[in-house]
Structure formats: structure tokens, C-alpha cells
Picture 1 (tube, rainbow, N blue to C red):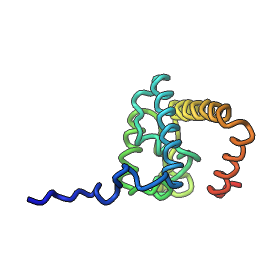
Picture 2 (picture 1 turned 90 degrees about the horizontal axis):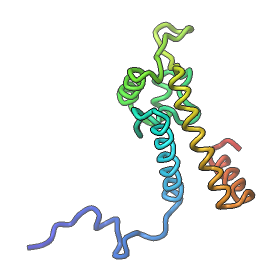
Picture 3 (picture 1 turned 90 degrees about the vertical axis):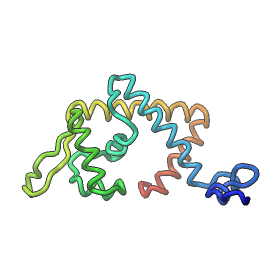
Picture 4 (picture 1 turned 30 degrees about the vertical axis):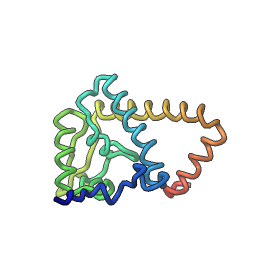
Length: 156
């Protein structure tokens, strides 16, 4: 009887990888460290009801003042998926969806004090990690890394 072919048979070579990591992996791996540190800091400071999917709502530049439809488009998720996350975060006291003062048919996202505090905790965790990476890479090389990433992100 012939063995079944698995999808991993096409994506993993005999050595375990298709070759050295490409740019996507090189960006993803540090991002996973950033995400883990943000969650750890949040949980240490009592925001233990925030989980990984919630982090995406808070990511730069943050949800403050945005319409849910705009935030969904920026995040690359459906409006339904985002509204589910917003509902959870609203129930947990991190944000409110308020009427848009210029368009009563629309809503705008407003962080509560708790939401702002969580955002500050996340930023503190990332700043701390940046200091660690700067110590590891050296000030000049870390500044170069930041400059290159800003250029790629269109914020040069």
C-alpha cells in the first residue's frame, strides 16, 4: 500500500527547511518576540483578559477615533471579525463605540482609561525590548535597523 502524501512533504526538505529564512520569516520572528513581551507585560499589570487577537486592535497607530470599517480594512479582517473583537474589548472595559459627531449613522472607537493604560503598558514593553536589542546590536546598528524598517514602512 502506498503512503499518503502530506502537504508538508511539499514544503519541508529533507533537512527540515527550504533554505535560509527569507525576509518574511526574518520580520516575523522578532515580531513574535514583541507580541509575546506585550502580552507578558499586560498580564503582569493585571490586564490578563487581553489575548493575542485583541493585540491587533491596539497596534500602531491604534484604534482611537477610527470607524470600525476603517480599522477592519487596515487590519485586513472582515467587519464581522473586528466587531466581535470590539465587542469583547468593550465588554471588558477597554474601549467604547460612540456615535460619530459628524455622521450619526456611523460609530467611532474611543479608548477608555483602561484601554489607554493597556496601550501604555504595551508601549513600555516594546521600549524595553528595543533597549535590549540596541544593547545587543549596538546603538549605530540598531538605529540603522530602525531607519531601514521606517523606510520600508513608508515612514522615512
